[in-house]
Every structure is written in structure tokens, then in C-alpha cells.
Length: 90
Image (cartoon, rainbow, N blue to C red):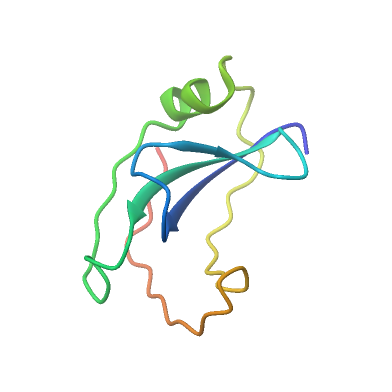
């Protein structure tokens, strides 16, 4: 991909940190939650995609081509359930 920005809940990385994917520097993750303190609680996030892109990549974003909402626990070998509600992009 030209560039992919992900928002993640990480077990160890600090909230607000930017993590570069180990296989390509064109995938960056911004940590929104860390640790176990907010498990089983609804969380609300409001983000500026363009500001976050600049933070992660150090350049202005191009046009938004796709959005994916995913739950993935394979790196931690975890079983999990996630619920999403009221996703808005505007």
C-alpha cells in the first residue's frame, strides 16, 4: 500500500505512540489504548485523520481510498469479542 494508518489497542505501547510495522514503513499504528484497565468498557474516540496521518508519516495525506474496521488478536494469540457502534467519518 502507499500508506496505511491504523488505530490500535496495544498491551504494552504507550497511548499516543506511533508504531511502525516491522515489515514496511508504509504502515503505521497510533496507539489509542494500552493495557487492561478499560477492558469490557465502551470507549469513544474522535480523531482527525489528516492530523494523525501527518503525525504518523510526517507528510500531508492524499485522498482517502478505503476504511476497514477489524478486530485482530492473532499476534497475542488471544480470543476476543469486540463490538462497534456509531462509526462516522466526515
